[in-house]
Amino acid sequence: MSCFSCICSRRKDVSRIQIDKASRSASSVTEGDRKKEYSNGKRSTRAAASFGFRELAEATKGFKEVNLIGEGGFGRVYKGRLSNGEIVAIKQLSLDGHQGFQEFVTEVLMLSLLHHSNLVKLIGYCTDGDQRLLVYEYMPMGSLEDHLFDNNQGKEPLSWNVRMKIAVGAARGLEYLHCKADPPVIYRDLKSANILLDNEFSPKLSDFGLAKLGPVGDKTHVSTRVMGTYGYCAPEYAMSGKLTLKSDIYSFGVVLLELITGRRAIDGSRRPGEQNLVSWSRPFFSDRRKITLMADPLLHGNFPVRCLHQAIAITAMCLQEQPKVRPLVGDIVVALEYLASQSNTHDVHRHGVRNPPLQPSEIDRN
Ligand SMILES: Nc1ncnc2c1ncn2[C@@H]1O[C@H](COP(=O)(O)OP(=O)(O)OP(=O)(O)O)[C@@H](O)[C@H]1O
Ligand SMILES: [Mg+2]
Image (cartoon, rainbow, N blue to C red; front, side, top):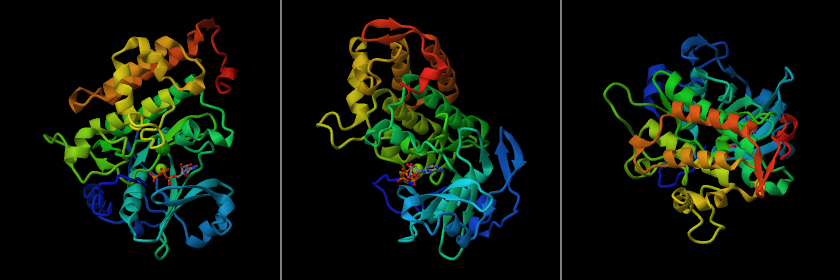
């Protein structure tokens, strides 16, 4: 589900704590098992269902190519229809090497415990024989990555307002992990490919196979092998393996930067000096006159300049080298909610002309 590099097998890396605490593997969880979960800070129960392989093969018409909707490090993702008519996304662990097996276990355990409107829902899983499959709610608009960077598929560029809506929703999902889950959960794989979108462009965080329980008591960090995705990983974590909630804040800053600029975190096709988005953007942070040059050209100037300045200020705070001075996610949520409300109500600056505010019906067309 991820691809950081430096880095050996993911198998040994995932959190043992919660798995040991749960004292059973996902493969021993059967349909109808009730599990404790955190729901809005309270414990409640809901279990992911156990599916047979045949049922999922039928749902995808034999994993037909036409139903393939994506592929990542974990394996292929298919669209399918369950026997009850529900449309789902089915992720099949690629069987070579079993590298993702531990991620599979962590994913099932985490998504059985964590429930929030900005986290993708796990409907079930399959552990028949060697097969490992995950069944999720289907997110019809795919990933944020598809919309920001993949414009050759005839997709409309995302408007400024929709970008702010996505930023707020993703921050709320992260706030739930950091502040409502107890103990807190460090996501570790925040990136635009893992932010999935529904029909209204409401975002949901996905892929919890690398997530870890945060430090408790006097501990300031969790020590782990470095995992994550190059370009999104906080520098102190990449160098020392010391993982804190602030590592996620840095990754969130990179996603904000992608939303604002329409540039990929790492883009080898750009000229030297522009390939690493964070390094490219740093000089702009301190030069207010040049800040509008950072905006995604696909926005064609359709954004409130004041909101752009504020969004970049939040981004710069998230990307500070020192983890301690990065903001807490709760403060980011408040700031972004304010920005999103301002973006909706302010005049839109376009090529120096003040335009009337966007009507709701216009928002998605920009
Ligand atoms: N629940 C879902 N609903 C709709 N599409 C999905 C869903 N989950 C994944 N996808 C699609 O499948 C693609 C691949 O997802 P996956 O999580 O396997 O890999 P990734 O996150 O892009 O990369 P990696 O796993 O290597 O970090 C996504 O970009 C998205 O387009
Ligand atoms: Mg993913």
